[in-house]
Image 1 (cartoon, rainbow, N blue to C red):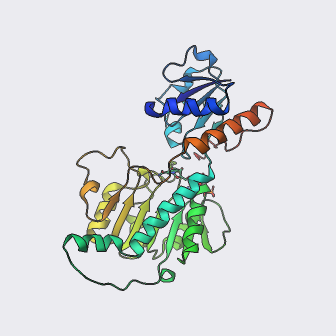
Image 2: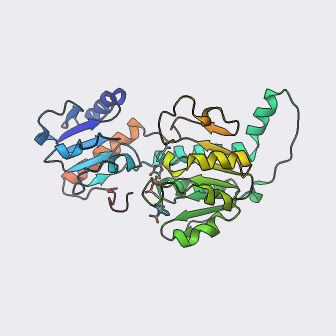
Image 3: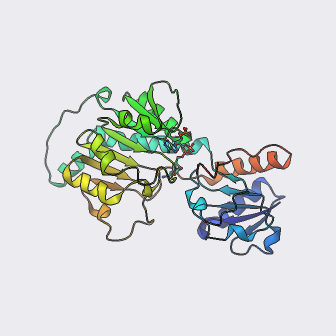
Length: 309
Ligand code: NAP
């Protein structure tokens, strides 16, 4: 089987080495040196240039390096007859839950406030509420959102979760679909976004949504930058409707120099690291999926291109 790796160039050789260590039988090419286009069976990619995937006439599957596939489906010429497999690695869910818990606890324990007080050499004590008095909501109850919601519930927060379809998760009050969104949002004190980016979820975090949260709420976006309407987020922070935002993902990455987020006193910026695909564990999952498929089994974790996730 011929596999073309099209990941950021600095990672491609490392992925090749890892794949070959596990599956020496693979014939691996690194984009743009694909060789004859008709030889490529499978592409392993994060994002591709528009039209690139349509160049391989015998393409049988596309594997996404990440859990999100919006970057690949953004290509208007994406070959929709070819199965698109997303990254599902339990380790991604563990890493994400750690980041989300850290971001929520940073606000809950007011570490952001004490960091600002320290800058002014001020010794001021505040009594914080109990975790059971601060409601946290998680948008998206998939592989990552469910684990994050469970982790927050285990820390003692009342947790709400929202998805397209109905879910039952111990310790989490769940809501479904557009009809369930207002009740999910109502007076939430912390909102975590773990949705996939689709035409339905793009721009969901806007002024109207922020207005439904409790005054002084916090927003944590670890999904995609385009879920958030930037000017609405900045306006909500400046009006005090939001007290802070932790942002790991952005419309343009890297976040451009001079962007207002960089210097906003109530914004924490991290460079898309909340949950990073691990070569060690993810390559083994890809190889295992490929081998079962070659042996006549079904590909696992295939995305529905119409649904967009
Ligand atoms: P997933 O398993 O596909 O779960 C997606 C969840 O979102 C599902 O619960 C789904 O509802 C819900 N959903 C989708 N469209 C919806 C809509 N229109 N209304 C309400 N709910 C909707 O995805 P995942 O593996 O958890 O990953 C989620 C996202 O996290 C990825 O797409 C990616 O963008 C992001 N991510 C970020 C990082 C990072 O480092 N920052 C790392 C990995 C992933 P149903 O359950 O009803 O289908």
